[in-house]
Image (cartoon, rainbow, N blue to C red):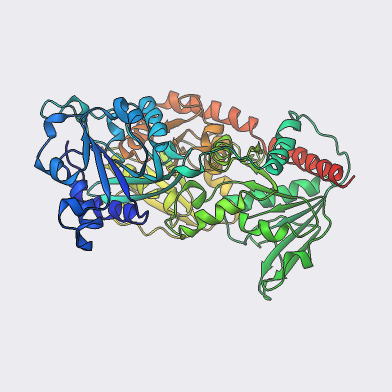
Length: 561
């Protein structure tokens, strides 16, 4: 329709204003609302009331000329009454380009190609708004361009340098994305090209790696909280030591911290050292074969420790353009950190693609792995138990979508119970289904909770890898998972799990309903899920890590020779 949600106007205008544009292109003018509001923001408050005194150039594109009205003629400098895909090549560059409720009118393939082209016409930003749940919509007043043909979510924009937010509107949400175009170039720094190329070009497929020599490795841990990333770092420490390597763990902390290793883990290091906050790493960490940074912010300081540094990128909120809980200043800091001459590796192809497309860093993938001797299928009687695992306070986990979908399922008459393993108690209201909260259980008890369930549900907006679905699959659970990026490393839709669009609560409810009612589908998914998990064993993952560490040491020795 030639209009859009009024609730999003102030959010979108703020994103335009912060760019201080001198030129704006409004794609899909419609009625002309954003042209009016942009004039209100950029000209009228500055005593430029007469049209001839307006400073900011505002052009528009409208595919349906019948929408033309006096607002178009008055507010806009130029309007091109053509489909954007037909005229974009003839237009110049603009500081800011608006695409408000536009993308859902294109099929995905056409929309993605068009978006790439539009980004190349922006000097500062492309600002997009699209409904998470587009309505079923055909033509409007004879305008066939109004037909909804696709839906878009966070993962669809990850090839760009983005900042996104979600705005609640009735029972829907507006996904608002700002794309910064100026970073979409390959890395030209010869030092980084050489560094990245050394690892990527020399790593060979892993088999059974013989212990060539003991490595001396420092792990610089970021904190002591229970997170998927921390669990994997600690598993690496355990496995490397079991292979005979010397591993020392470091943590910056206060005087009451007696160990770098958190007490919830059974990992042990050959030595663990707590460094006072005010001291530098280089006073304690020297002359290792490799230093593994646990967090990107540690990298600049660790570069002074006379040892090669590796950072294994697992993904985090700002990395995916989510600044819900942190300042957007992190975006500029990340540009600097990812340009530093250290070894970057990635947890998944999804993360590796972001590092390459956004920062020009070519990386080796070291995937997560699951201990299939710990996570294995149970044999309890089927009782319609759906399992959730994760911290409800992290917005990107999108447990709100899980709760909404489960409520929909309950209202349809499906009967089930839900177990939720979490670090903190959820505070959702309006839960209509039976819910059992399993609060902060010991880590060695979590596999039992997988074995006690019948179906696993995972609803993240984005994930660098996503360990809980793989743990569920190792436990033989048929799994419903959102298409959140990193899970594509191991999920084969319809074969070993059911994959649904992120944020689509109806699709989530439909997938769960299908599994609750279809014993044969559960059986097939369960068997295939276990087979997949065996391909992503912890031993396979950590062998890949060991291989990379040996290559880093070899490269450092060559530099010193």
